[in-house]
Length: 79
Image 1 (cartoon, rainbow, N blue to C red):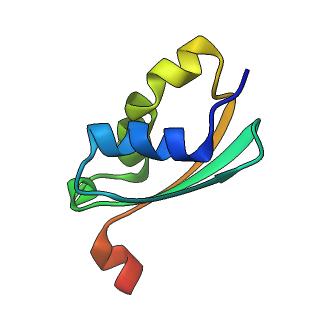
Image 2: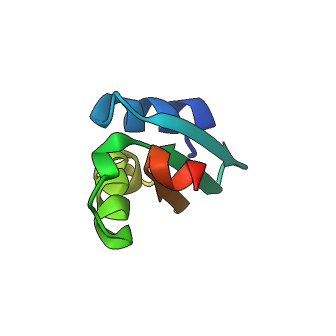
């Protein structure tokens, strides 16, 4: 069983409503680009932990198998 790209986006937005989220994937491997002010002052590990927490239910159920995360603040994007 797999999860749609849109469902992954919704999981992240539920946890991080201020985020801009783009997810691509093929039903097994996914890549999420998440841009959020919530990441301000956090290191890469903490940013990734926030995103993983948002999709934990899909990972635990086996619907989401592999997720590559690009997590940036708006300032990091503009630099």
